[in-house]
Length: 139
Image 1 (spheres, helix red, strand yellow):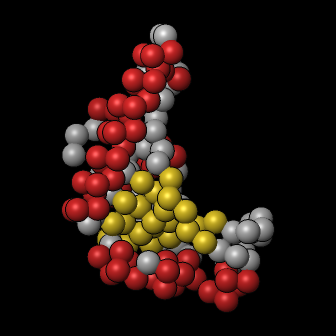
Image 2 (image 1 turned 45 degrees about the vertical axis):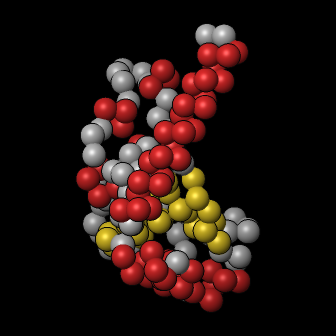
């Protein structure tokens, strides 16, 4: 594949990503995923409009492809599910969070928690044993 072909492909992928984001924003299909009460409080405080419209997957529930496909997801989900979402808003910390510790809302603030948007794309050319199922998903 030549340089021009790669640029055209990247431009096409960027346009598709932007179109998916715009479509999801218009549809206002939000999903919140977290099993941590303080994280739910943090999202509710930082993104109140989106949280108010969101389908919330919490506790021991596991998000499914149907939950996240074509949605704007806030929280932590596996990469294979994130590839189905339009975008994933992840909670990040300024410092490395302590594993196995449930933060309080004050603790999250003290550790510099913030929310950042990511777009995850499955590279089917690099999948061993078959094509990426996210490429064939129809909304």
